[in-house]
Image (cartoon, rainbow, N blue to C red; front, side, top):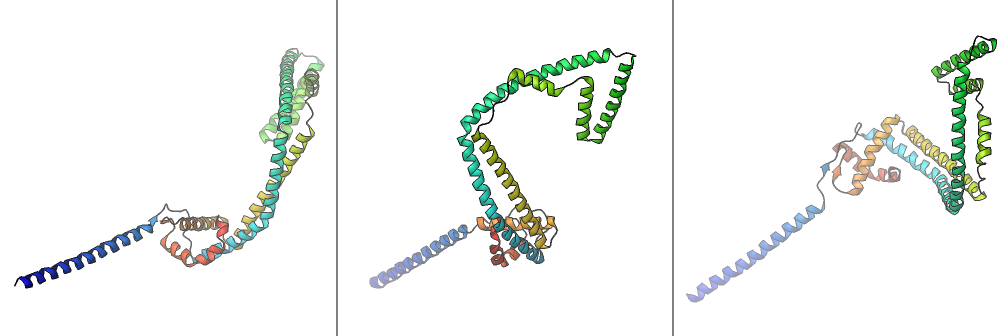
Length: 290
C-alpha cells in the first residue's frame, strides 16, 4: 500500500514538472510575441494633406513628371558644380583681401561722412535761398516769367507723380531744382574738394568684386535652369501646375514617412495601397523627392 502511494505521488510530481515547463514555454512565447509586435509600430493617421488624393492615373502622370525632374537635375548638376567652385574661389579671395578691405572701408566711410555733412549744409543753404527768392518775387517781367515756368513744371511734376512715371518725376524734380538755383554737381564737387576723394580700391578688392559678380551671375543662371526643369516636369506630366505639385507633395510625404518607418500615414488608405503597389517605380525617381 505504501509503495502504491509513493508511486502515485511520484507520478503527480512528474506531471507537475511537465506542466510547469509547458506553462513556462507558453509565457516565454507570449513575451517574445509581445516584444515582436512592439518592434513594428502601429500605424497612426498623420495630419491630413492638402489637395485631392492621388489615384492611379494621377500617379502615372506624376511619375512621368518626376522622371523629367531627374533628367533636369542631371543636366543642372554640372552648372551647380561650376557655381560651387566659383563661390569657393570668391570666398577665398574675400578672406585674403579682408585686411585691405577693412582698411579701405574705414577710410572711405570717414570721407563719405564728411561729404554727407557738406551736402546737408548745401541743401540747407539752398532751402533758405529758395525761400528768399520766392518771397522777393514781384510784378516785374523776370518774376512773372519765373512764376510761369515754376507753375508749368509743378503741374507736369504732379501729373508724373499721379501716373507713377518714376523717370519723369526724377527729370522734372531736377528741372524744378535748377529753376530754383540748385546745382547738385557743384555741391558734390565742393564737398569732395573739402573732404578729399574716396580711396581707390586695391587690385585684390577689385578681383574679389569681380569674382562675386561672376558667382552671382552663375547663381542666377543655375536658378533659371532649376526653374526651367520644374516647368519641363509639369509639361511632361500633362497635369496643371497646381495639381502636379499637390500630388508631388503627397507622394513626397508618403515616401518620407515610409523611409522613417515610424508608423505614420498622412495619405488615405487607398493612396497608401496604391503607392505600395507601385513602390518599384517610385524608387526609380525617389531622388527627385529629396
